[in-house]
Image 1 (cartoon, rainbow, N blue to C red):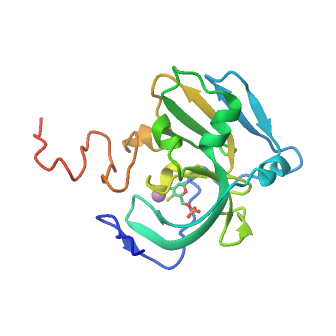
Image 2: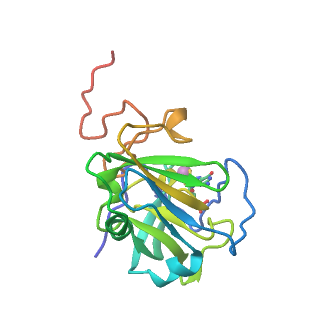
Image 3: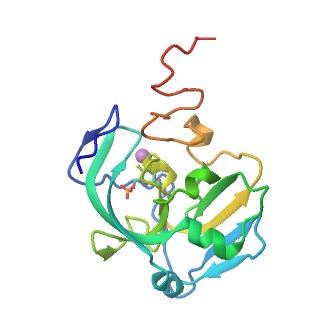
Length: 198
Ligand SMILES: Nc1nc2c(c(=O)[nH]1)N[C@H]1C(S)=C(S)[C@@H](COP(=O)(O)O)O[C@H]1N2
Ligand SMILES: [Mo]
């Protein structure tokens, strides 16, 4: 099936690696992914645990808000909704914050985290993530811009009230849907072109 490129994006051949806060050192022998916040069961997974939980393999494009996209990336990971089921997320949870080893954070609405295709990615194009790609894990939501995909993921926290992440604090959108072109806060997207300037 031919999928269209979202408005304002162009394909390039290779990922541009970003590390706003530097590339951290990862000790995989002590690494844990923590599930925290408004959950009945606080959980921790080692890298070994995560590899055993892989339930999703698909080919999806990746879109950076700066305008570059990568076509047909093969991803392998774990549906966030399956992790959510295990941890029994409470009713009050409305937002999800991803925390990274380097101090980077990103925030998304819980419904986007629960989308069928939203995963914790462990492998790209048939191989474990490289350090530059965010080894050992990063969330990937195909319908959200790439800044939401926090590399070197260490914690998923469920919260009720919205809190900015690293780029959200710098004016980027609370949700970041690529099809609605939600790049910046206060931008209502391409379906609302007549937004008045206040
Ligand atoms: N920890 C961390 N995660 C991050 C970033 C970052 O600087 N630090 N940059 C984000 C942005 S803006 C994008 S587009 C993607 C880029 O992924 P790549 O570095 O694998 O190309 O990572 C996202 N995740
Ligand atoms: Mo980005």
